[in-house]
Image (cartoon, rainbow, N blue to C red; front, top):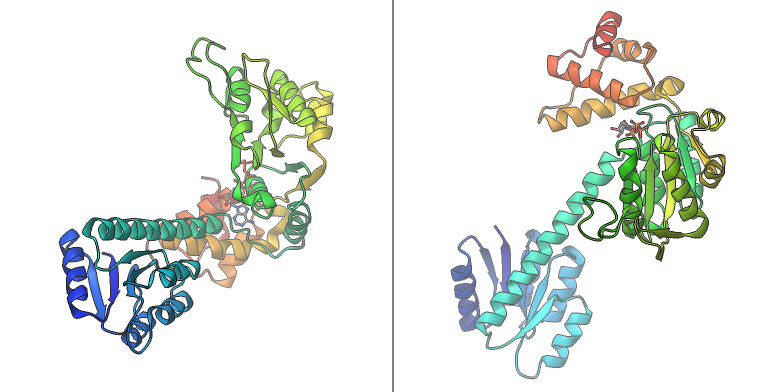
Length: 387
Ligand SMILES: Nc1ncnc2c1ncn2[C@@H]1O[C@H](COP(=O)(O)OP(=O)(O)OP(=O)(O)O)[C@@H](O)[C@H]1O
């Protein structure tokens, strides 16, 4: 249900506007203000999705109302209503942040189109904001240990540069989280962050996945297709599980890194790309190099900056914080009130020998939440963690 404020001193025009809008959509909730002062008072006490605002009004004019809206509800779209001779002022209000203006007497079609666009725009903005909030919550990096602080410190130092980063660490230690923050804190943030799990893609498909292909390059290539490198142009590509990439694909990635150019599979045309590369692996790449499974030259190209993400066991002091974080998020996901673990329960969780994978800790908290068991013993932890 959209909440609309109509600020207009001429009763006949106010009536027409209310009629048009109510007929357009019965669910619109419409508030009226007969002068600028009433409009300002309503703006201070209610949240609106749209304001239609006359320019000439007694007490406070449309410009003053607009200024107040920008101060109290900066995101709400404001459509100004201008009479004869107000056109210059109407244009001025656009500079002040008005969404649009319509002339008096209001033309039905123009009014409805403007209202629809303004409301859609507003909804999109709100959805975007919520999405952003969700994304940053999802990527929260919890921890106060020295090791996690040093990871955060490197992220802050390295993120704004274009340096390539190799992130190492056991499964589920938070490598993806680190890659995400390197992008988020860089100037590339408004451009794409493209992730590719090299272990999950069959080796015969990885080249086409990374670099795209042209029609006819192979049997199922029935049209030209861009790959992830092109999709990430201007942004960041995150090559997760790079240690599992085939040698031919490694050779192609190496060329892309050396020359900032790629070729789609089946084409010899170079395509310039500007992509920052971040890679991650849980493998010991030095070992893989000795075993001829990973190219040494590629390693050196990738590992300009090395970030070693500590495993959970190396930062046990963070366990109570993580437990609290997971208990809260799991409770929220289930629509329950968050509960807290006792000190002795936390100590049991802290002293358990985890695999290092943070997901394991989260799973245990989830099981305990489902059972409503927040008072746990060593045996409980062992039982739940080993499941
Ligand atoms: N410091 C942290 N604070 C809160 N959650 C974390 C932290 N580190 C990791 N996580 C969570 O643990 C899970 C595993 O993290 P992530 O996927 O980043 O690990 P990974 O090392 O990339 O895993 P994999 O090796 O399986 O690719 C995710 O749900 C992530 O949100």
